[in-house]
Structures are given as C-alpha cells and as structure tokens.
Length: 201
Image 1 (cartoon, helix red, strand yellow):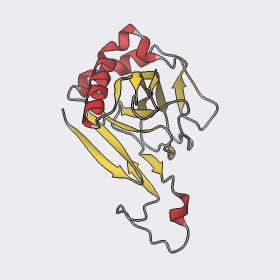
Image 2 (spheres, one colour; image 1 turned 60 degrees about the horizontal axis):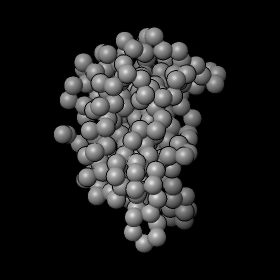
Image 3 (cartoon, helix red, strand yellow; image 1 turned 90 degrees about the horizontal axis):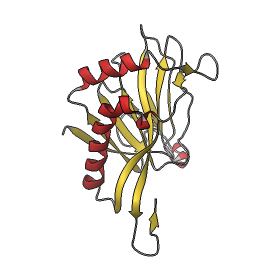
C-alpha cells in the first residue's frame, strides 16, 4: 500500500494513494450527479446535503478502501484503540472562483480529504503555533519557520490530519470542477486504556 508520512509543524499528516482511483473516481462522479449539493452562499464551495455518505450502500466500494487505510493507520502509528471509523462524510464541489474558508473539524479526532478530480486547488494547512510567527521570522519552504504546509494531491490521493489543524483553499481557477470528499474519523471501542485515561467510543 503506497503512502507517505510527513511531520509538519508539531504534528503528523499521513497520505494514501488509491491504486484503483481511475475506476473509483469515475464511479464517485457518477454518483455525485444524483446528489443534492448546497452552499452557504457564493463564492463558497458546495457540499452534499447528506453528510453521512459512509452509511450508504452505493458508496461502500470507496469506504472499504478508506477502512483498509484506517487499519493501516492504526497499526503504523501504534494507536491504543480497537479501531478507527468514519463518523461523518460529505462531498465538496467547487467551480470557478469558489473557495473553502479556513476552518477546523470539531467533535472529531482525525479528518481527511480525498481528491476525486485532478484539477484541484491546493489545500493549505496553517501552523497552530502563532508564537512562531513573532520575533525574528525568515520565510522558508523548509520545515523551519513554515507558516503553511500546502498539499495539492493528485486524483486518487487522500490526506489525513488532526481535526484541530486549521485548513482552507484559495479560490478555484481551473476549468471544470474541483471535487473532493471530506470526512471525520473517531476511535472505536476501548481507547487509551492506560494511566486512567481509558474510554470506550
């Protein structure tokens, strides 16, 4: 399973690539033609009215792959939980000049973006360390003093990140549509059983 792990700011993001993304994404785009999308107003990205796509039988082919990735994530990060599950999931669709405002995902442990189309605008992740932007500051594209980490994954890639990590997109300037799937992830079953911090989700 092809993936990458990169340490950014004081945290870690994990990415996966879907080996069958051409077939998967074609099916997803076909399904999205039947979904109802709405937005909070121009120029904001439109989202599916249904925010639990993970519960729908017709989307199982996609979430089966996501669940395989979550099993790998649990094992590769040695997480003390019985499992991970998608708790909320929706599709996003942007046309020209539409964008996604800076935000976090509350009531969630990890979050993810899956890129359905290639003509995507990049996802910008902002440093949570505002103190690092005070005092002497030298702009850099390296790990040192970086304000943002930008990911513009190709179609079929998925990026997972802590839900508290603030992120946004700039206005979309491509032709056609920018289509992604976003979702939230929660632990499942007995979690963190040591040192009086255990809980069951």
